[in-house]
Length: 151
Image (cartoon, rainbow, N blue to C red; front, side, top):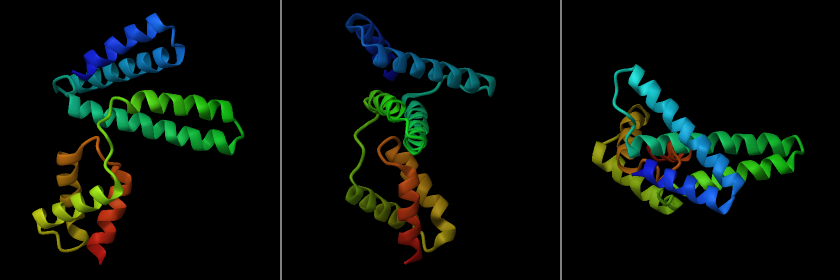
């Protein structure tokens, strides 16, 4: 489903002569193909839409890191280019959860797993990943889980 949406968007970007969107979507397609090839090499089927969300989040994270580096280096035009790519890729992710929704999801996951301390953090994160893939930033969520379990 996501693959079809991206391929349709590639065609629309070609027709609209939107070079930034077109190059970003082609890069996304290339990344998907590489991930599929890697999965096939491990004897796994092509990536599902849920797996693709993880790939997209990884791509966005890489671009966010690039933005920081470009801004530190005084390269505002390159930082702006990376932000445009983030916007294009983000369009294919589900709506991100607000911080209060994330905290509630964490509290629910802690209750569901019966987590009692830091040793149970992996269980809580696993539940969150299963239920909310693509909807929350797990880097931030792990900090919130750690705070919730240590109190």
